[in-house]
Length: 405
Image 1 (tube, rainbow, N blue to C red):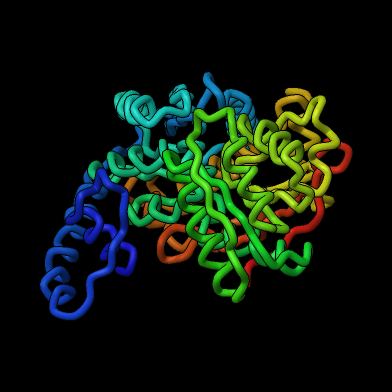
Image 2: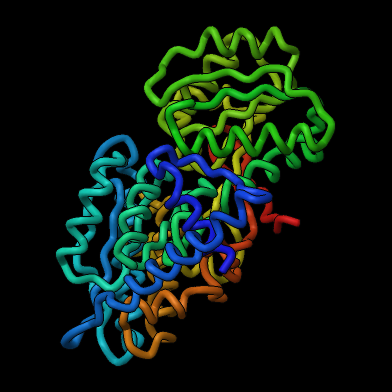
């Protein structure tokens, strides 16, 4: 009930603000009946959800196929098709073929993401996989919660996502885990003692990581000497990086998207910053062409790395490269691949293929896949290893997999 209560409390606040809060004392006693009622309504909606018809079971997928995140979207499409082909070749689910009703382009835009969700609902799907960013996944989750639809986000790491409702899940780690792991790495592996952070104030993902990084750094009793704001549209970071240099920081955290990473890294180095630069999973596939030297002493966390010698990773990478080539191989694709396999496992375990039963089967699920082996917790979040990647001569290289404490 923990997750249902959190969901209900969020529903009672201004949902559009996407800001969580805690209620204590007499306020908690007043809110509790309403919380239980809201949770019951969500569960009731799920029991009236879609059941499969005919010889196929349909699921829907949303991904950023065009726009600035198109590389991730292409990898997602390929990986989804690959996973479905493997599932159907092995006999399908519940004796039926798994069918992708559609892979809808959400363009990495929150409004388009809601439109994508609505479009998938018209296709009669029993579950939705989507999408890449937290800013797009959260509004999709709000719609799914209202309708009792199962939604699993492959890559959205903002913690607020799964608190939307008991029918919302994810295949990736969350920022309250990723941030402290980045921080611990900077302190213990890189020897950093003074940190700076530049984050995009208009992005849920970046805000979530910024918050968790600064909290973790303070928890180590270390100094955060500079916190700078930017936006997802910025291309000039000269003011921020000059202050980073002046602050005396020996590590710079930049929890932002891949398209701005090469710009920030180059400008930081040209401003004279020689310390380590550390980013999150959205650094995956950053273009270092012509900037290889700038990326020395830079690192990021990720969901997996193609060089990981594990059997599951190498099987996925080999099949993907043989089918689609290596140019579009991304961590996003691996997360979408695992998401399809997770949904298929839950459908099989449900016994019926009805959405309400799939949700029950996915709750607390244990899964072994490309991005790790894990069990979903009471909020629908996996506790799983985090991969650390280091740039060497401009190329990302797998460094280690570390399980959070």
